[in-house]
Length: 213
Image 1 (cartoon, rainbow, N blue to C red):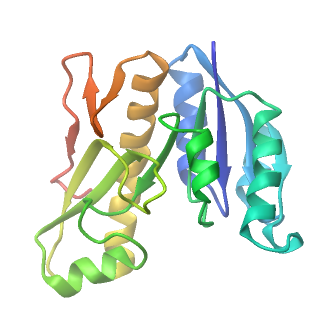
Image 2: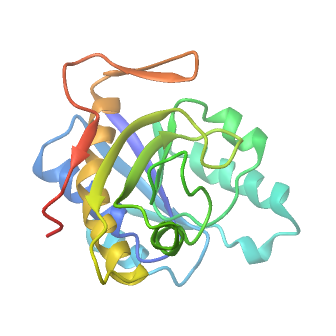
């Protein structure tokens, strides 16, 4: 039975999708804890109501990133996670932190990496006039948004889209894509070789949602 620890900063809608998938699909895993860097994160309430341990490591209480990351490591290691899941966790992690959880920490980024790293991905996609947009699940490395890509999902960019409309479409995609990838990890289907991810089973690593619904 593998243990997941999910890091959030806000509502944690991807965290909710993962918790629900874990229960409904009867994964051989459990969500051991949800940790937030913000005490007012709405996702903490969802975790508590689902009998999941919650921890707050408030970044505002620490003098610098290194001190915060050290405290976060201590909180994480209490639960001995097999996988650390970043689900809307809005803090940059130190290289030492990333190295500690190498190849066992995932993130979902709201773009088709390597395009549109960083923030404001949806408006930037609209500004560039792309016809498709999407999300990428990747292992986390010290280089922001450049870790080995595990899977990607695609949605169309439609005439009249705003950044908010496009963001909502991508988020619905993430709720399907992220749990799927985490289950592959739990089932030991993922291998990282030369900074590339290999999938042991014959399944597509590209999710299309071109109906935009």
